[in-house]
Image (cartoon, rainbow, N blue to C red; front, side, top):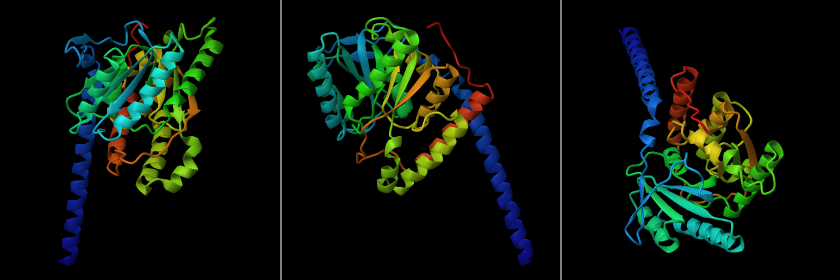
Length: 336
C-alpha cells in the first residue's frame, strides 16, 4: 500500500509538472505573438505640458529632424528621494557646458514609469525651474518597465545624440563626454565626416555603451550576493541570446546617434530588465557599430533589482529567443 501511495504521488507530481510546463509554453507563445505588433501604439504622439503657462507642447518623433545637440532620457519609478540629487548634478553640468559653448543645446526627458510617490512632482519642479524647452516629462500612467520608459523617451526626443541614464546618478554625468568623443571619433574615421564631425552625426548609426567591466572584481566583493548571482547568470544568458562582444550590457549609461536610436527603439519589444540585451541583438542585426567605454560608477542605495528579477529576466530572454528565432518578431527598417 505504501509503495502504491508513493507511486501515485510520483505520477501526480509528474503530471502536474507536465501540465505546468505545457501551460508555460502556451503562455510564452501567446505573449510572443501578442508582441508582434508592439509598434502600432507608438505612432501616437504624447503631449508635453508646460507647468508654467499650462499650455500643451506637441511632442516630436524620432523620424523628425534633430532640434537639439543632445537628449538625456531618465526613466524614473518611485525615485522621489534619489532623483533630485541626480538631476541637480545633471542640470549643473548641462547649464555650465551651454554657457561655455553657444552651439551646445540639450533637453532632459524624465519618463515617470507609473510612480506612486512624489516622482512626478519632483520632475515638474525641474520643468518649472529650467523651462519646458530644456526639461520635459512623459507620464506612462502605470508601471510598464524600464525598457518601455526609455523607449518612450527615445522615440520622442529631439537630439542628434541620445543618452539614457539612470535616475540614481550612479554614473558621473560628465562621463557622457567619453561616449560622445568616441562616437565623434568613429564617425570621423569610418565615415569621413569633414570639419566639425558633430554636424552630420545624427545620420550615422553608432552606439556607445558605458561599461563597469573594469570594476567587476570590486563589485563582486561589495555587491549583495543575489545581485552577483543575477549578473553572472545573466552574462551566460546574454552570450547565448545575443552573442559575444559586449562585456557589460546592463550599465544604464548608453549613448546613441539619432540614426541608431531610430532603428533600435522602433523595434524593441522587451519592456523591463532585458531590453539592453535586445539592443545588442538588434545592433548586430543592423550592423551598427558598438563601442564599449569604461565609466565611473558607484553603487547607490535603493536599487530596484531584487531576487525576483531573475524570473523576469529568464522570461524576457525566452520571449526574445522565441520571437526572433521563430520569425514571429519581424524587424522593420523604415527609410532612414
